[in-house]
Image 1 (cartoon, one colour):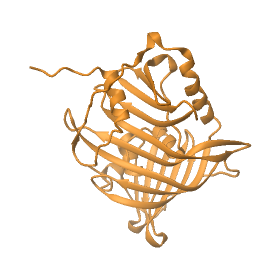
Image 2 (spheres, helix red, strand yellow):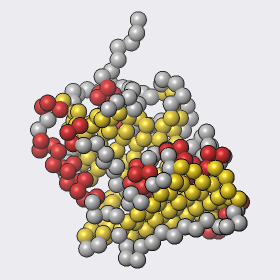
Image 3 (cartoon, helix red, strand yellow):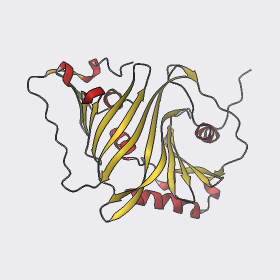
Image 4 (cartoon, one colour):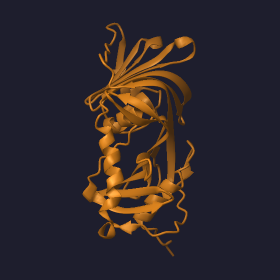
Length: 290
């Protein structure tokens, strides 16, 4: 006899509240029971949207970032901690220089809307590919769209769903969970109603399985022009790939900012591929490959 299926909207909230705690090995998605019934879109009070709208409006002033961060990569292919220079121009370009011990440059990753470049100085190797989630995974450690990856490193949630796609919400212990649905996929936002800060963003596939989750911790004031914005010092991105209906492989990237400037003056991203470098397709790269 087939097992009864949990409703999709309920599974989405369960996975977020459970922390989506999967290791980087092959695991099963746990779906424990959830005690309360979410409010459906037909009965949602519009006042619940106000904190989310305020949180989203606070991101609009953030256009560029320059900072230094420790980046920890935990994936089946590699476990590595890098000291990174991070430069981002929102919706245009992303530049990360990762160094290991004694300041040796391990890789330079340059991402733009149409392409991805990874330069490995120790091998004088330049890897080039299209801007797509698998190549972004090879460049920064987790699969995502260009906008999702750059927003994660900026420390802001990638809000892509229109407000009229809100399917359900649930408020508990000062947190509001918003579940949006566009097509077959869902987007879940966890927001603190008091601070009006977003603490988690999750994208789920058509089976309500988590595909990408970004969490934000240790908020601090960061200057943005004449304004100040609360941004997280700690960011964690987890991306899942599914080989079977219930099995998954997770890749985890933790970002901890040591220093950063928002919208710095004289901001510029400069990446120029060495002329003598050996050029290969990014898809051929063993680093971060399945």
